[in-house]
View 1 (cartoon, rainbow, N blue to C red):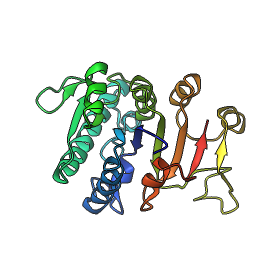
View 2: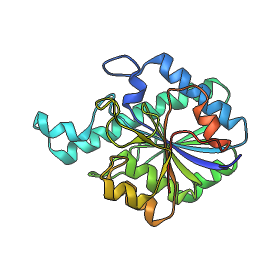
View 3: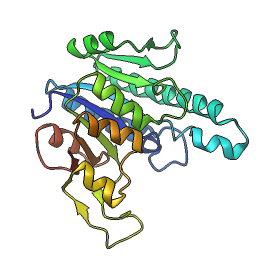
Length: 234
C-alpha cells in the first residue's frame, strides 16, 4: 500500500444521504464497507467526522445562541456521529476506539496522543470526536492537527465532489478539475479546500491532502493502493 497510516475526514452532511438531517443507515453502511476494505489490507486508520447533519456551531449565532456555546453544541454533534460510526464498524468485527477532545468518559476516552498512536499500532481504528475541544476551530482543523500528531501519511478528505475544481462544479458546468495542485496554487487561486487554519497546518508540516468522492464505491481503497483518484494537494 502507498499509504500505511491515513487520517480520513468525513463531513457530517455526508451521513445524511438523501435525508434532510440525521444519519442515513444505508450511507453509514456504505462508508463502513469502504473503511473495512482498507482496514483488511493492513492500513492504520484514524477518522475525524463532522456534525453538520445535526448541528453546526456557525449556525448558532443566527438562532441567537452565543458562538462559543454553539461551537460546543457542534462538538457534541460530532460525538453522536462518531458513536454511530463506531457502532457500525464494530458490528463488522473491527476494533475501534473513540477519543474525545472534551471529557465524556462514560462514552469515550479523552484524547491522549501516545494512547491514540498505540491504538493505531495495535490495529484499532481511532475515531476522534468533539473537535480539538476548543471553540472557533472546525473539524477540518481537527483533521489536520490529529493527522500531524498521529504522523499520518496523508489526509483524505471524503466529500461528495470528486476533487478540487476551478469553480464549484455543482454550480458551474464549465469548471475543470485539478488532478494535482500545490498548496501555493490553492492559495493564489482562492480555491475552497479546507478552512485556512487547517490548510496552513498541512502546508507547514508537508502533509499532503487528497480530496475525493467518498460516495463512489472503491475510491478509498484505490487511493490507498496508490491510484490517482480525486485531487492531490502537496
